[in-house]
Amino acid sequence: MHYLYILFSKSKNKFYVGETYDVEARINAHNQHHYSNAFTKIAEDWESVLVFECGSEVEAVYLETFIKKMKSKIFIQKIINHPDILIDILSKR
Image (tube, rainbow, N blue to C red):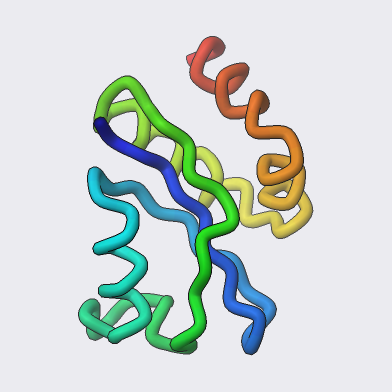
C-alpha cells in the first residue's frame, strides 16, 4: 500500500503534503528533521490531518504533485474536509 498524507504544524500554521508506504515512520522522520533540506525542518510538531490510501505509488505521487501545484491552503483544507475529492482527481487523469 501507498499513502498520500497531509501534515499540519500548529506552531507554524503550515501544511505539508507527501506520499509514503509507512506514514508513522515518515511523520517521525519529519519531526526529527531526518530530511535536512526538507520544508518540514521548520517545525517539530507535525501531525497527520489526512491519510489517504492509494492503489499504487504512482497514484500517490500523482495526487501529491497535483495538490502541491495548486499552492493553496484553502484547497488543502477542502481535501481534508472532503477526501472524496481525491477520488475525483484520480478518475479524471
